[in-house]
Length: 388
Image (cartoon, rainbow, N blue to C red; front, side, top):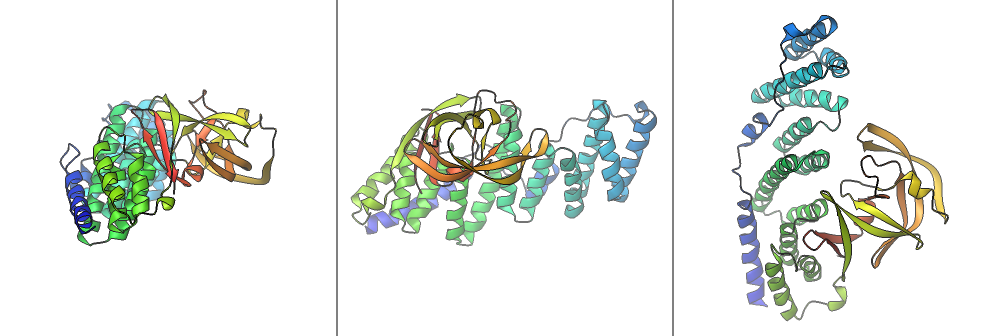
């Protein structure tokens, strides 16, 4: 037991330091991260090429940005953004991004954030604005909020290059926050961080090793065993997980009854996402796209109309962020939703169309997934999960 405890502490220190250098990029200073943002390429935005109203609006926007006249910035940017000519929109967007970087360079973070929200009010999926907002949050020590914003931006990425840039920024902020917590010996917050990361990136196995290490550090061996079992077949860290499991099996203090079982459910790949089959009200088979960014499970109207069993309608409406902005949609309570061996009863589902996903019946959100600990094994295309 003493040897095992020492090995856990050593392993914990090694993992925390080792993974800081795993990602293949150099950490910049926070100031540089904020200023050197991959803003979109500037279009040909010669004001002389604008005519009439567009020229006047652009001049008003430019002057208001310099004088920090927020009302004029909002009004002129909104009008330029709604013009049919993309050149006007791109020029206005680039000018605001340029001003944001300038005021950040001068340390005017509050004004910079207000300008970011000007962009997001026009387009909540603005990829560059979301990255800027995330960096502003991390600069003020709001690391989880910064990560939340990046995970949202990841969902709006249009290609693998954009996804890779977002993941790189996520790793940077995680490393910064880890280091800060480790130096302050805030072990409980580290445990909470790794719990959060395994939920937000259930396909990234190193998070599960870190989570298990912190669980062992807190003497929660049953939870550690469940976390390790989920990734024991992973090609990247599976051998490390199996070695840790072997040491736990030698430890006679682990209560076998307290260890959550691990279930495997096949997945179907849809581009960068995965679809899982579920059973609604023990009767209807549906295909749901796994979406850890969705707080609520979603059914399409076509699928929901097929339900002939009981559900509860309390007249509830909820706002959902979609490709077309925020929309109101009805929310119902169904009797049960089952995946593999795990069933959640009396679960709420929103009903609305899902743009760009005609082959699925809805989204599997966190109001189901929070009841289980899960890992998406991309290589085997399997959802592995255990009871929390």
